[in-house]
Length: 207
Image 1 (cartoon, helix red, strand yellow):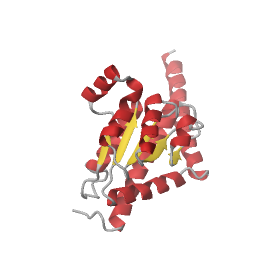
Image 2: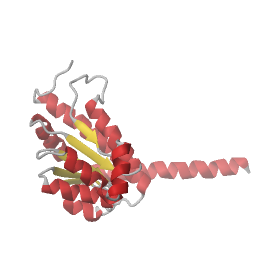
Image 3: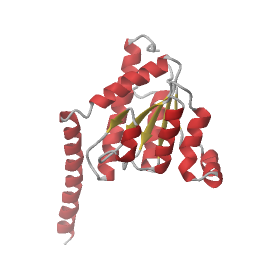
Image 4: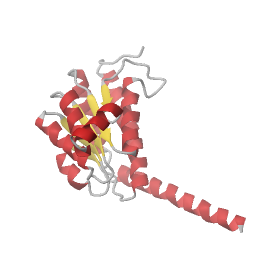
């Protein structure tokens, strides 16, 4: 019985891996990487113009937002020891998040942070697997008013967030875990491209 049960769970695990692989292969073969290149080039332009990159998301996407911001402010690759790159996760300040949730409502949390910290020429990367997160949508809407470029890491058909994004990375899946796996791979690719573009342009240097 134990052997049969183990075989069933191994089969389930294998199928999860295969779906993740298939989604990434689809992204590679169907032009899904082009938005990442466009995002990287624009982010490099923004950093060179003294701008910064803001990240926001909920739950696992909040963790991804913090993760990717840290790759920029600290470093991503040990072989690329370079200057810090200006980036901020809008989901990391618990006092501000809870104060805004209490005083203005949870939907306004990221928009309020964009208002406080965003400047024209910055970039906002919103991460929402459904493309429907109300607080991410509100952040995009506020960013547009402030002349902040909006990029989305979305899923499925992109939801209403897609129309608010200048570029969107869009894994064609409705399975949250598989979308998140594609998001973090894409995030690392975006960070690597951004680093390499800035190094090639001479804005960053190896230290």
